Length: 196
Image (cartoon, rainbow, N blue to C red):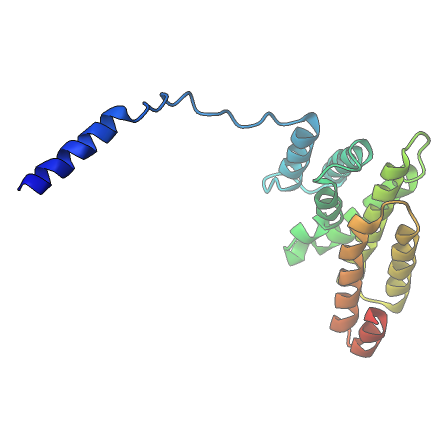
């Protein structure tokens, strides 16, 4: 009993001597989003809008938002995601009755790329990101419509991307996808040679 009382008194003494914890302050606010973060969010919101009408006007809005983001923020952490999101937009059209819209979107994107890829005043990083978009667009077209010509065009665009400064962050996805396309098209031996 004496031992029990001694332990209780000792614990009470330590508790009284322990420094008081400062009161918890207000919860920390989430870090402020940069204009580039907000632009990426706006692009994906526009891209993923299920209720929007499918027509050339919508396609142009999605393409314009994506290309503007890519050109203005070529080194942002979301740029590769925007490149892939824009290039793969036609994959969001899954209704078989609307299949013509898939190729229509790709046509509108190709014309926009011709106008925008060599635009005056683009920084080298933006030119690299645009080359990545061009390769990604061809990648998704080749997946949708596999032909030898599409595959050769894809290879040319990936090689052109590889010659641009800082292409490494885009190139890994494109090369991996190229090998996947080869494998799915019963060209496993060619895919293996390419990997080597």
